[in-house]
Amino acid sequence: MENDLKIRPNNFAHDCVRVALLFSDNKLGLHLKGQLIRCSTSVAANYRAACLVQSKKSFISKLIVIEEVDKANYWLEFVKIEIIISSNELMDRLISELKELMAVFISSRKATKENKR
Picture 1: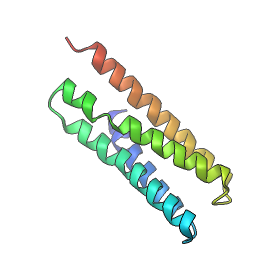
Picture 2 (picture 1 turned 90 degrees about the vertical axis):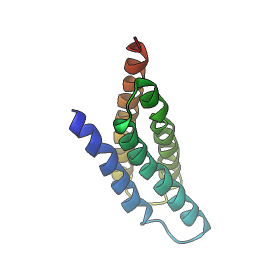
Picture 3 (picture 1 turned 120 degrees about the vertical axis):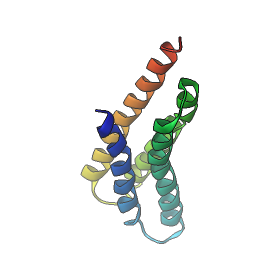
Picture 4 (picture 1 turned 30 degrees about the vertical axis):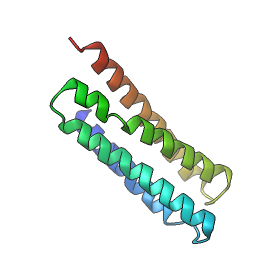
């Protein structure tokens, strides 16, 4: 499970980048492309950083990844509603993975806070 959690955010980021590269180069497409690439890659990078910390307090603070997951969720839902790309199946898969990652990260933060002793 631990190794899986190191891989999943990275795979998610790569999938989001691939999706973002499908957006048109008009003003909206470029904006959405930048937003989705920034927050999805930040999920992977911040989770990786959280895994390297030395203390529980640092781990909790590095879980800013939860905010980045929420931002990615917003942008993916926006893209889906605006029908920026035609594959609802792909968007649904990414949103589902995002929600699973969010649940895991929130659970990790909660468990770490409860075990502060």
